[in-house]
Length: 454
Picture (cartoon, rainbow, N blue to C red):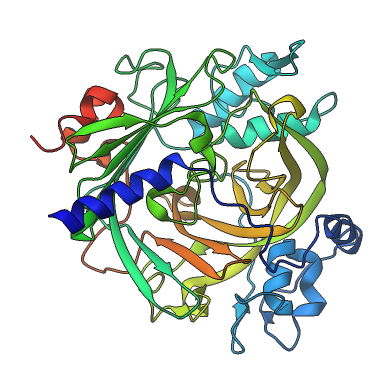
């Protein structure tokens, strides 16, 4: 019992603390290389269908890769592409992958959405009511508008993983040691809802537009440890989400301080500002963006669900890179955005730059390069948005099928997969979720955390 309590207290302590300074880490990629990448990738053509990118030919196609992916091929860090890596390239599936209700909301509300910059430098989104806020972001404040599109990008009204569905996280260190965890997840829209069958606004968490509930099922010593984040519509009054952690050994929840945005979620390589389906979990109030340009970037989007995700055999180890059996990579149109805290709020923040490679259809960040406070590349995170066939033809956004959060400086990694167990489903979306998970108070309020051990 004592060891379990000590372990849980260590986890909670880590959640409260800022991520330690990485000034002694051996990162060699400076932020100035972003400008070099922009020049190198300025002239893009196409990649012929059937191309297979390998260690022998990758340089021919580097103009279609994020900076962090290039570093993996170059072998700059401890994490590097395996010698036998293969990335087959197929046709792109761009357009028609979003629900009709989301597209309709974008067309209805997009023209009226605007931004106001306050004297304190904070940004306020005006007249947002659902859909993509700025379907064609333009100056002024184009970079911030791209950021807002990512922050409010499409997610289903209900995104649920239960003990009977599949969602597993593997923590991998530089020695090849692997520590698996399983999670229950209830990510839920509480306002700006466009999915069919839902009210536009739920009432279980007044004043919020989104809630995130996570609970560990394994390992046993972490079981029932849970977190809840509440995202408020009025981000000027609440520039940070409210985040609570339930500690089963204490049988109570603790509210985390605002400095916890840099803390790891359950000890993983995602911080609280990273752990969202779209690649950014901060706010649109005290962050801004600098638009860097549009590019065609490789991403794995159309998966073979029967083959993808079984760990570790379907991963190219030790990096944990998708094997060719997952499916074919494709070019996606992306807006490249450099996200930073506004100057008055930047002191003490862990990331000096967050480079978002934002898919211009989904507006989720399919890849993120993160720079530490010394402007050195620290992490690269892949968010692989999956589309799946829909009845009547075409495809529809289905899931974040996998995510790889790679700490390049310290050579450890966290891998998430929705697949890998043929006897279990992946994410349960909207009304496919069991009825019990529609209990908003239990899964979307601080008081609900106190129900976990009842």
